[in-house]
Amino acid sequence: MIFLPAANYFSWDAYKKKGIFYSEIPQWNIDVIKLLLCIVYFYAGIAKLNSEWLFDAMPLKIWLPNREDIPLIGFLFRFDWVIHLFTWGGLLYDLFIPFLLIIRKTRIIGFCLVVIFHLLTAVLFPIGMFPYIMIFSALIFFSAKFHKKILDKLNLILGLPTVNLKRQSIMSFEFNLGNRLKATVICLFFFFQVSIPFRYLMYPDNLFWTEEGYRWSWRVMLMEKAGYAQFRVVNNESGAQFYVNNEDFLSSFQEKQMSTQPDFILQYAHFLHDHFFDQGMMDVSIYVDSFVALNGRRSSPYIDPEYDLTKGHESFAHKKWILPFNE
Image (cartoon, rainbow, N blue to C red; front, side, top):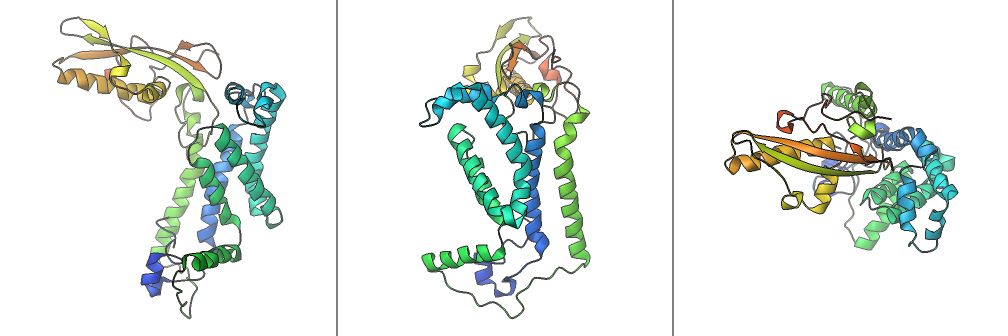
């Protein structure tokens, strides 16, 4: 948004600075936002092209039966065919909704599907503001006339002062040095947007197990992990050792998140090291006994219990202290 003229219409800036008020902007300003939304959806669809989602219905087979208390539709989650319908429906929605929104003749249908899909996910899953953000963001695919009508009605409802458009009310895009820099930055930005989700291919082992390359890859709600992590502190000076009660340092939510995510485990280990260093233990090693269950599987050892986590540091390198996914 730094490089887009977001403040040039229906804004305080445009009201106070008449010289920046425009009624029309270059089409690419709108298209880049559309492209961002299409990337989110399409990549989320590509990520669902795996056997666990399509044939095992994981992790929805774990989550949906717990929502039987929902009125009208809750009882349906007892049936496997309904859960598989949700998994295949989610896949098809993510893959095809960008095209339904882009094509003018199918835009209304596409937007109705957006509203239904995201309201349903908001009811079923505690994922915060994401569904509502996606619903309102999808309005960008509608024409300028549609948005002009909305803004005109807001003007009437709120009683906002009108602003006279300048005679030349079209923002041009001249390819001078400044704009070339903008174009270069935007091209690089989208290069990273389309390439970063595939960085997991540079790492060994199962993506959902190691989570290396998982963030910023639009793999939305594709895994359920439950974990247990007990940390052992060794005082290398005296040889004494003891186990940490995680409740002394973490909330229940923090502990749940930490126990299944390697970078959180590492960060927590370094926090413990610093804590006990401040208590007077100058030479401390931190080890963890960790077990994780992925998408309904049996719990398996997760972190090498003989690895001193204080020796590890966060980086883009493969975390060799994560035990292999043996399946």
